Image (cartoon, rainbow, N blue to C red):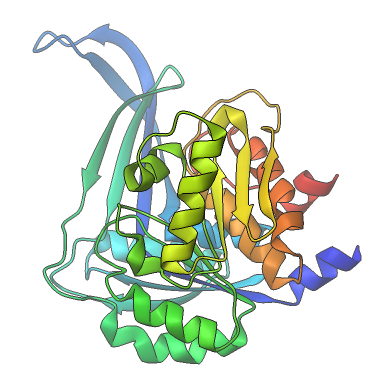
Length: 309
């Protein structure tokens, strides 16, 4: 066992955010419906996977660290399945249960190895649903080497500013997978990890690298962000921090499915940083991990062996 692998197995990462259940229906397409011009899928297999913040937790676990997940679910059948899947994978569940909340489910119908349709089951809470779990958060933070906030815009992270403040006060690196244009919510974070479309929503479209650097520098200064990691799909990644702009190309691999690649990136960064790897050294490892999972179908993980073999 390498020194890094031993360090990874000796740390814990805390993941907080919007968890969901991914359901897949796989089948054969043999005809078009007489009712409408759509394919008829004869389902031959069903599969359930962890999604959202739960997929982030699973990606951390795949690299060796112990993981705790704080999230809020409904009191429904998908919540039971989500909890069962988490426990099967030895992920510590700190679940809040809200009878007014539908546990988020993404149902994907797959025919001929292609996604034909996705159906989302969810509702937006009309109240703050994580505030009641601040005590759980405060107890979990000291046991963890890094804290990840996985924001999918489902209402589960309305209380994120106080949580970031408490984690930073405890000396823990805070990583945020952001959603929406209000980055004031993420003030003080160690690193945020938007993709191109998400960053353009905040700073506007850019026409040059110089313009991008200037706008990101202003964003970082305004919200006291130590770093911003921009994922650029086929163009690789860019890290903006106090040392400047570090850019690396994409890890060349055939792209099969980009679902969950952002989860893999932030999970890998968090695992490495919890194990004491500096952000600039963790970045190319996260880039390799993303290259691995896009070659797999659906939400997937990259193991330590896949990364370093």
